[in-house]
Length: 391
Image 1 (spheres, rainbow, N blue to C red):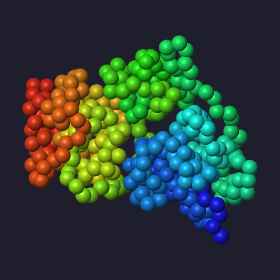
Image 2: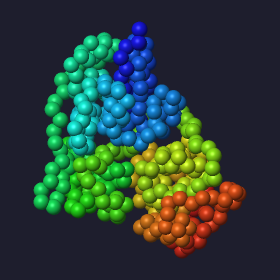
Image 3: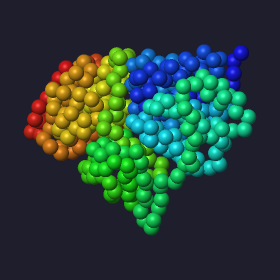
Image 4: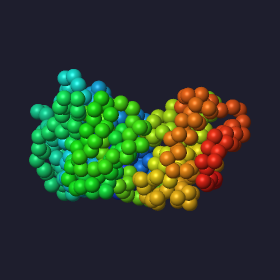
C-alpha cells in the first residue's frame, strides 16, 4: 500500500556525500511512502552529480530551501522533510529555523505545511510544524527513523531589523575564521564564534559586527535586501569528499556559447539552458569553484585571477597556479595577473569581447573560436600577466 506523498528537501553536499540522503530516500520508499526529492541551494549540486542521483533528487531549479517548500506546496505536497547534516547540531537547528523564517517572511499569506527535519549530524528528528491530520504519517516516519532522537522545536526568531536608514541581519552558528557568503559572493570573514551581524544601507553592505569585510568583493554585489539575501558562513564550500567525480548532463542542440561569470550563482542555470562551450571566469574563487563544477561537464574554462583566493575549494589554498592544475577541465587556461587587476581586466573583456553582455555565440569552428578567445584575452591583459597555466 502506497502511503501519502512527502517532499524531501535535501540541503548541502555533506548529507549526500555521506550517503545519508540516499539512505533516507531508500528507507521511506521501502516503507511504501511516495516521495519527491529536491535540492535546496546550489552547493549540493555537484554532490548530487557525483553520487549519480540526478534521477532521484531534482537539481533542475536554482531554489532556496524556502522556495523548494513553496514549490512542493504548489504541487500539492504538504508534508516536507528537511534532510541535512550541519557543521554542528546547533547549526543544523538554526538552518531549519531559518528556512521556516524565510518561508513565512517572503511575503503574502502562506499555506502551512507539515515541516519535519532529519538532522544527521546528531541523528535528531525535529517536528517544526505538524498539521492536524498528519500525526499518523509522522508516527510512521518516527518508526522508520527509530534511532533518531526527537527534539522539540523552538519558535523561529526574527533576526533581521531596520533602524532609520540601516538594515541589520544576525547570522548565528558561525566559527572564527570562516568566510561570509552573501548570494554566493565572499564578502568578509568572521572573527568570533557564535554570531555576526551584517549592516546594510541603501542596499549596500557597509559593516559587519564580529567580522571583517573584504571591500573589493563588495563591489561584485548588486543592491540587495539583507532580509532576502542568501547568507551563510563556511571555511570551504564542501566539507566532505565524494567517493568519485561524476559526469554531468549537458544541454545539447544549438550553437555553442561562451559565457562570462563574476560569481558561480548562475553557472548551473547557464549549463542547463545553453549549449555552453567555454566559461570565462573573473576572480580566484569564482575560477576555482567553476573549475570544480565544469570538469564534471567537460566544459573548458578561461580563468582571470590575481592570487587572492580564499581557499573555498579543498586543495586550492593560497591560489598558486599549480594548485589549479588538477581542477581544470581539458582545454582550459588560467591567467595570473598582478594584484587587484582581475576585476579591471574582467571589465575590459566584457566590453571589448562580449560587447557589454555576458554571453557570446561561438562560430562553427568552436575549437578555433576558443583559441582566438584566449588570444584576445591575453592581449587585453598585456603587461598585467604574471603567469599562465594551460591544460
